[in-house]
Image 1 (cartoon, rainbow, N blue to C red):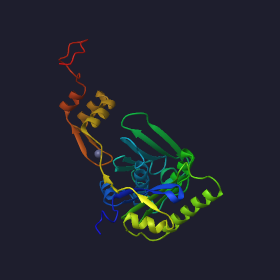
Image 2: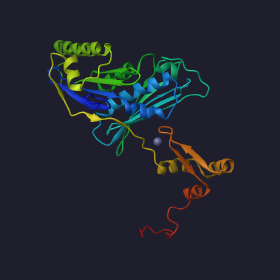
Image 3: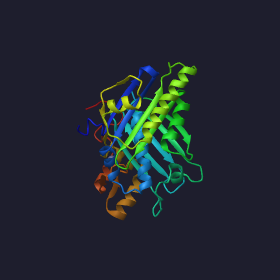
Image 4: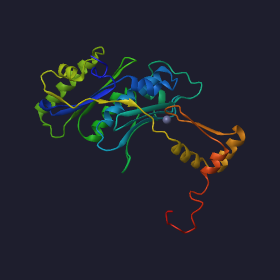
Length: 304
Ligand SMILES: [Zn+2]
């Protein structure tokens, strides 16, 4: 069994017809270590980013068009921002802003890192490449990412949704279960859903076992028929481009860039997600503010 067959950096959507539920299972391995290797985050920060990444990828697998899921935890703590993005193509990237000189204890939970005083928030953004952005916000409280997001999803989608995340430091495993809207909402239906949740709870209490998804799911949800889609690959990818850097620099303004040039001889920026450096010299800065088409006659809309 190779790594792909064993579900490493793979995601599979599945249906449990016998329980009116559907779900997503994913194992993140190299994709996650690549997303984090550019950074030297304290363990607790990397751990929370890993969990957010697992959740973001599971959510992104439900996207029906070119779009990204952005999960951001923001507050006034030693880690004012953690940000993870996952796309419909199951690429992911992540970064955190850690205050300089901050000491972060191991195993600190998300709320304690981001907002120990209680005024933090977790934002879920669905940003289509083309179309209206959607944003939902939940107040950060003590608890793990799976609980926080699970509660939020139940509220916003008005259908029961549960999320499980399991991390052994190398591999992160995510499972999301959704009760289908057409499920029977009577006592028997509620009992069937609770039984499924108990089966998943029991599976996640066990040590990590890298079986192929189909084998693992049949084992976890014994008594049900599991129908799965073909697994899809998860990978690390950053969407930063020189053009986006130029746009961001334009927003800073010519005066600010000029003073940076005087101070350092060039404008040196670094992508916060992947660490790639973009250097712009004096001529490059001038070009940023040059008219888009100097040869075009004023008032003329014709394209030459
Ligand atoms: Zn980048």
